[in-house]
Length: 451
Image (tube, rainbow, N blue to C red):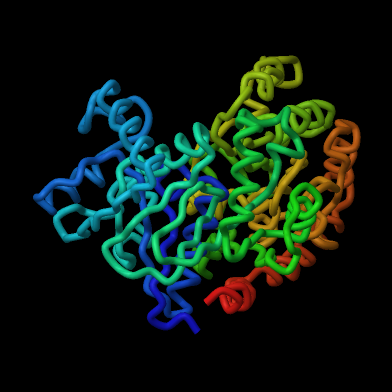
């Protein structure tokens, strides 16, 4: 259906060195579009200059880092600020943001380092055309914030469609636009995020107007969109989201192989409780820890996720739980924090966990529970937002605001030897509903309405 169609996907989240749910979605989208025969380009906003020397431009594109090293190779902060201001001025004057092709030769070794940008894009970077418009997303957001005007990017080739994997005040010249809105958490739970709510509301409203189609990842999110904004329901398609993690091979999935892999974290199979997600208020880690503190178990609680907003408040009980006691004279950590793991590590942690506890306050989709199910891990999750829709009859549901309810669900699993097996088999079946093949079907149906 998409044979030969030139489709541009934004690199707004793809250019982050660490994983996010939106980044995982973007990579899954690229792979799906390639399977459907489309010619894929990715538009990045890396802060590197466009130089006459194509090889040097490529080297700088892959060298730039986020965080404290961001300006090491490129301009100093004052020049960066001035450059962004000039870019905002040009957009305000109606000028397009010009994107330049980035060559991907054999000079730069791809995928050598897992923890930075090149490692995070190595799975697709050599199968797509790469374009870069320096700080284009910052400029677009800045202009929209100041004068409520969206930006337009111009690529040196014809484009059939631009797919924004996240709401952006940006379009591509000559292309139709599809925007994915994952959730409206900043509007539904404004006290759980740091977003500028006025800007976010206007941004979503603009995206609903300037996009030819809107895609979302659950019926729950679609209902949120329809209840808050005036939009034709027929313009919003639900495609859900596929499970991106590859299953363990027969050799990798043996009990011996899993046990050996877990030993590096001092863990044993089926003897730890797992949480996966960012450490921030909306993920509800604090209540998970409070509920765990009331359990009579030697199983450690393993928290996998990067530290987000107010992470200190969420983890404030960890120090108390990890202190030596009569029952724990060696002071062995009861709560363990693994800040960021590669997808390969996650597969083994899901496979070896006694259960996943994921009582999130709100989710547009909720990928961790589904990932856990695909690896045979029983799931405890929230009875709100999209989670019952995604997890079906294959999970234990709790009130995410009730610590006792979360604790009782964990106790139920610990005390009933048959229940974990029942949830494991139900989880396998539920996960099949979100296969790559089903995602392709829904994505094809959505694209057929715009191309």
